[in-house]
Image 1 (cartoon, rainbow, N blue to C red):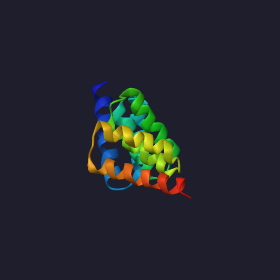
Image 2 (cartoon, rainbow, N blue to C red):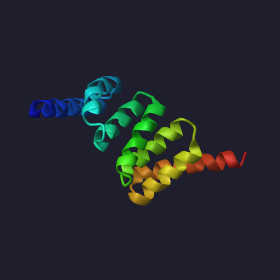
Image 3 (cartoon, rainbow, N blue to C red):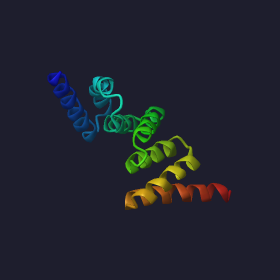
Image 4 (cartoon, rainbow, N blue to C red):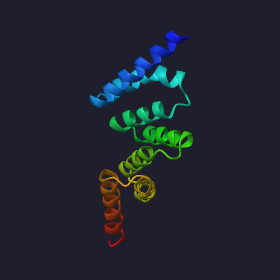
Length: 128
């Protein structure tokens, strides 16, 4: 049992390195068994969401980030990433909602800039 857990941990770390190296499809391949072994791990779903986002699998990214938020509603990064996935799908109003929550939870410049982008786009579309 301990060896399986170690293998899972190593696969997770390998997937993290692959996401960081901008190899999201390889990361997803490494994450497959990890997701099976740890279906209730928010960190595993968050990493999967990042890999899906990096490979433009936007609906899957959205589902992964929603799963993270089911497991941990206070995860501000999952809110931010969900907002980005929704934005890339053209679902701007939904993106704005998630980005507002992310900014309220953790007001860092990256989140504020993303919210500003989405809010500006909504204003432009409204003024057409």
